[in-house]
Image (cartoon, rainbow, N blue to C red):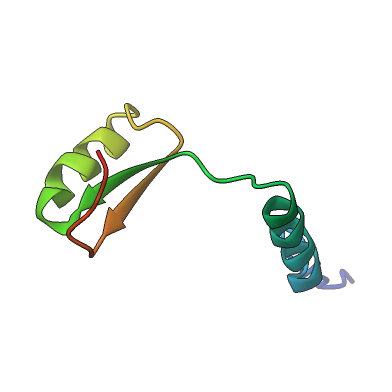
Length: 68
């Protein structure tokens, strides 16, 4: 007989781990590096992401002041 067992968890850590990481980043003025795309440029952002040309993180912005 085999026993069905599973391991449940999060590869990124717990909620407390996330809170500590965010607090550390805020304390040391660490900011993420992102490519920000306005909603009107969603196709361009998606194309760069799918072709592995996006650097770091590609982010959609709903504001008018998105930085490319």
